Length: 187
Length: 107
Image 1 (cartoon, rainbow over the protein chains, first blue to last red):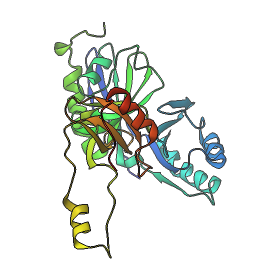
Image 2 (cartoon, rainbow over the protein chains, first blue to last red; image 1 turned 180 degrees about the horizontal axis):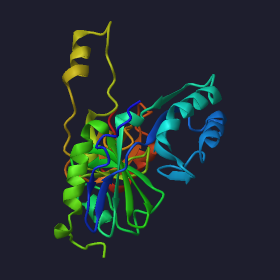
Image 3 (cartoon, rainbow over the protein chains, first blue to last red; image 1 turned 135 degrees about the vertical axis):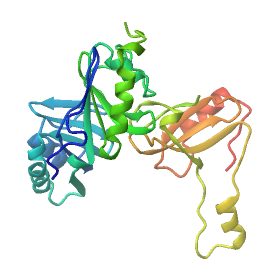
């Protein structure tokens, strides 16, 4: 496993701050999300199976719904391999796939009053506070690349993108979050 | 701008989040078929002005395929439905007929 994250903790400071969140453990799990074994396995490694398009957090772990046969488990970077081992044991006999993808991805965080607006400039998603609320995992695109975004709390949006485009995502987020380009649409 | 509701994840997906997969419900002709059938399967596509059935993939989203029934003329979307079907569901045909009484489904 890598010991350095994609952008080594790069920061674009300002009223709305963009930072690379550093090493983040991520495990992709594909399989039949409706099966009892799957639900039990997800309870064992984290907060359990989320509803469609939701992300549920519990302590330093979270489970996000990615597609009708796929979830993403977030955990501390050092524990990702252990989560895979645990899932493989719990799901033995099922048709499934569990892979540690921590080092194939990058995680970024946008915080501050212009966070929604910075993302709204890049993604074809209704990010109005009444439409996009905390707890929704939204897979979409940011400018030209796929990404997944969710709102942790007010004014804090987390972004997951492929590691190979981490620099691109960081740069477009930093440009969109720049205070001189603030529109103030969301108040 | 075309906006389709992905039946897999429920997102109202903008066209730029999707990738088009061409005409839906084609019958595949492979080994053992006649040259005419194989040619038709490979190259001949309906290009109607009006109601059309298409395959779409929520590429920048949940990544899943689905079907859409829409009007190529007005971009009106009648329904989106599962990819796990080889025929147009009756509910979709009913939804189209409710808006286009003169339209009939050719099979």
